[in-house]
Length: 557
Image (cartoon, rainbow, N blue to C red; front, top):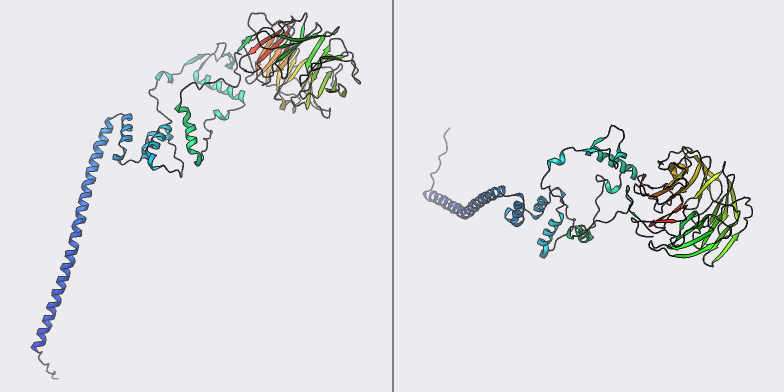
């Protein structure tokens, strides 16, 4: 098979094609050169910048190394000072620097609070100064860590011994013993002493400036920040002896009553010399205000009314009693109370609200009278013979103490017996008192023991356990009374000289400096009373004197 003959190309057309190819190749080469010429300067600039940055980083690292080496040779205080002054050169933020200076006690600034531009530096410096709360000790004494033994036979430490084998204790054990006694006295750990669970006060963002000023106020001032404690300390009672309250008129015989006026700075005395006297109490002269004489009426007991306008007095062998109205100056005899069949009317109590008067009769009868009209309201009876009674501070209940050692609790409104309990170890009841805060009941017996109970236990149990049995009297306890703040319980016996003790209630310990050792001053105590704010304490004795003592812990009368 024969192929067709291919015509030969024209010389002109071949030349044109080659020329076109050359032109395209030249254009492509020019275009590539333009792109290369456009990218070359930018690549050079990037390389130069990278080289400059690497060089600057190397210089910065070298400078930091030299500075840190210098700081390592400096003291801690110098290093902190240099960082505070040259902090910008180290690229350390102010917040980080202050946090490092303050240590773990760093307090974060309140969120959302921005600093003013013109005063930001000074505020940060002041904040740093105020918030550095913790400092390390300058030195540590090795002797402090060594255990030191304490002699427990000392008279002030004998009470902390649990057995005779504990004649010597280490300081750590004695500290734990003191903490245990404090917690028993306070009923647990107080909130201010519980450091673990103590909460920090919250701050309000809007008042952050004023709060910080108050917190820093203590650190910005100098002076005496120590003041007297509000609670009465135990052990030694700071007191001074004044002239007797009735210095201008001593009683001729036994002084059976001393009582301070409920609102005025006045004290009343009454005795077997048939007189009732009023004296102004100033601790210096104690001038006499007035005296009244009740003919053929030896006084057994006298009391102010709650408003302080009347004085009620009963006799030793009379069925009548007198009411002295101090506003009008008249003496009103109450010859007989209808419905009260008693041979003698001696012991009585006035309710704290001024509404009632309770007469203690024979054979266990208690007669409740209206204080306003002096008429009988109702009669109650205890088993056996009633020796003493006391109203609660709210006048809603009456505690009556029988000769057999039983205590009856009466409801004043219904005149029904709410509860009865036995005084532990009592063979014969003598006196009873209820504290002004209605927390304690004190029962004194013929054996000289004064049992101190809490009112909650007395209302629930028939055989309550006393929180403290006071055994400092060796003869019958004939008088017990609490001070208005319920920090002192005064107990006394009229059967022995100097038989008066003052008990510190929170710790249930006796003040060791009263009465004065080996100095006869009180003799036979017949009656005791505290002034309305515990500033004075008075004891009436068988010599006709109302001894007066100033309790320095209390500033007011």
